[in-house]
Structures are given as structure tokens and as C-alpha cells.
Amino acid sequence: MKIRVGHLYPDYLNIYADRGNIAVLDARARARGHELAVRALAMGDPVPVAEIDLFYVGGGQDREQALVAVDLAAKGPALAEAVARGSAFLAVCGGYQLLGRSYRDRAGVELPGIGLLPLHTIAGERRMIGDVLLWCDWAGHTLAGFENHAGRTHLDPGAEPLGRVLAGFGNDGESGYEGCRAGRVYGTYLHGPLLPRNGWFADRLLADALAHATGEEQELPLLPDELEAEAHAVSSERARRRGGRF
Ligand code: GLN
Image (cartoon, rainbow, N blue to C red; front, side):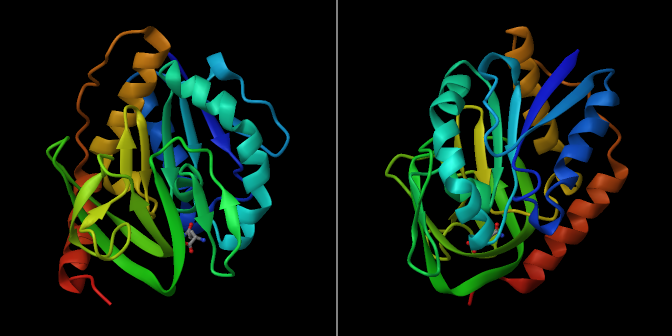
């Protein structure tokens, strides 16, 4: 099966090796006999609403976010339509912030978000940096990664977080939660890149993308994942040692 990925602003939002997430999706798709077809969705490009199974946007500094925010806002209605039709979406850090209603950066400039996730973000003084470990109750798995953000993300009442913080700061350093998920849309602060050390989550994204492509929910056969499990253990241990507060 061809799994069609729309990679938003790969030249602008690609901090902390977030591009590695695409490489992992490609390898894990091929391991099951599928093909990942990735197309860049750059500034000014239209969004091929019915032709993308999974959208992806990485993280970036305030400057890069400001460079793409207006273009992303223009893409917003088409992205919302694609998600309403069942496309999946992974947004990391700066990209995650712009999937909410707005991001007020360190200079106090309010950038428009596209409102795909029920949240808003306001940058604070001290950056939240370090290894993170989450418990994702909805999946029965831990999620390990690295965070580096000034943004404090506030979920609307009733919004679903991606996970509960076991170690690290998470969305705002106070709520005890990190990220946000709504249907097949997932936002998170976790870099690393995220997916090499969290094979289960990469497979969740591939299953969601295949469900969009085929119209049927999918279960992917498990992979051995020895290296991935080792990477997860190292990342988790680092987070636990850190504890994770200012
Ligand atoms: N510029 C945003 C912040 O500082 C996002 C950073 C990132 O993508 N790592 O919160």
C-alpha cells in the first residue's frame, strides 16, 4: 500500500533532527511491505486535501515559526477539511504550537495558529529543556523524548493530553500533562527525534494513515524493535534521573 505523507515546511521547521521521524516512518512502512510517498508542502503550495494520509510538521525557533505562520494559516481550512475526512497529523513542538489557536512568542508577537487542536501557547522566560518521559494511558505505553521550548501550552477544558508527565516539564511545567491528541491528530513537544525511540507511536501513526488510505482500521504486525527498545530505555532512564522541574 502507498502511504502518502505531506511534510509541511521541511526547510523551515526541522529542528533537533525532527526530519528523522520521516525516516522512521519510511523504514517501518517498508518493513511491512508498504511504501511511504513523501511530498513537501512548502510556502505557497496548495494542500492536496484528498491525497494525503498523514501530515507532518516539525519544530522551529520563534523566527522560523513567524516565517511560516501566515502561510500555514492560509493552508488551515484545507488541513481542517483533510483531518475531518480522516487524515492523520503529527505536529512537533513549534509545529504543535501552530496547530493550536495561537502562539505568543518571546517578543510578545501573537502568531496565528490553525486551531486544529484545542489549545493556545504563550512563551515564558525560562526555557523548558531536557529529557521527558510520559505515560500514555490511552495506548498503555510510555513515550520518551527531549524537550526544548519557551512556550507554555494551555489545553482547553476537556482537551485530551498525549500523556501524563512522569519526568520533565510537559506542556507548561505545571499541569502534569504533555501534548494533545484529537482523533488522529497528535501534537507533542517531544523531539529526539521522537519516533526512533518510540516504535509503538510510529506504528500508531502508520495505522491511522493506512486507515485513511483504505477506509478500514488497521493493526500492523509487530517488529522485533530491539534497538528501539534500547533507545527507549536509555531515554527513559535519562528522564527519570533528571526528575524534571526548574
Ligand atoms: N519556538 C518555540 C518555543 O520556543 C518552539 C521551539 C521548538 O520547536 N523546539 O517554544
